[in-house]
Amino acid sequence: MELFLTTLKSVVLLSLMAVPGFLIAKKKLIDIDKSVNFISVVLLYVCGPFVTFDAFLNSEYNSSVLINGAIVFVFTFAFLSIILLINTKFMTLLKGNWHTQRQCAYGSTLSNLGYMGIPLMQLIAPGNNTIILYQSIALIAFNFVGWTVGAYQLSGDKKYISIKQAILNPTTISLLLVLPFYITNTNFIKYDLRGLQNSISLIAKMVGPLVMILVGIKASEMNLKELFLDPNAYVVSGVKLLLLPMVAFLLLELINLFYDVSPIRLNIMILASMPVANNLTVFSAKLNLDTKYASKLVILSMLFCIITIPLALFLYM
Image (tube, rainbow, N blue to C red; front, side, top):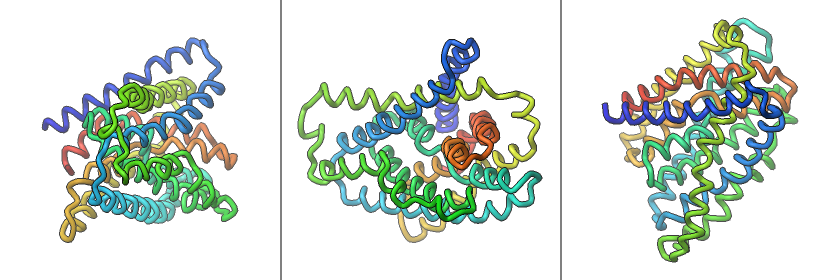
């Protein structure tokens, strides 16, 4: 029950951070498109890498952590890829055109792993750098799925598969840059660089507020009738927020027969229980699909996850 209440409080606090963005957008105090683009760039190119730097530079080298990290990578890639293929078949049963069915399949599979998963972990387990370290590794696997299986699934065209983008992105590059420091124990534990340490940590902790402000800004454009009256959006949220955590739990129990998964259990359950990934909107824009429909799937699942995330962690942790 304590975990449920802690998680519920954390999710509610994160959700409340969306209110300022919603209000300033509704009052037309900002240019919404320019603001969304600016915040997205800051999150991708600044805050994301600093989360990785902060986790690795505040952790001592441990070979078992790298082994667990490799398991997180493999599990994330395999889990998302296989579920996406299954959901692509399942979502053909929904009403709508081919494109919206593909968006529903993508949305019901890929999680808001970085933009919501990391800030939630920072609130649930403050100071636990190891789980953030694992999360950075999971994000690399997430990007591989997004730019390969995900890009092909959403577009139906192999030309959109990009191994280059899967590798040469800020998340992967930041991990490759900081990994030698981690392995050689060249970190803030060994060297007292308090000012630099605090600066990196401060930027890393900006992810949560910036992401939720971004969500609030996007929500300001949403028509409530469109948001709540689309049955497909409820199916997507149900599969993403209720079914996937159950599947992940069963897989963890199976793996636990051969290998102790307790150090990575939270990361896997966060992977499965997060709402629809924000990058559904990004990929939809890139492929000239309906971005408003994508945003609807993201925002509705964000509303439901206030209850489903605490419930999933309570039941399956």
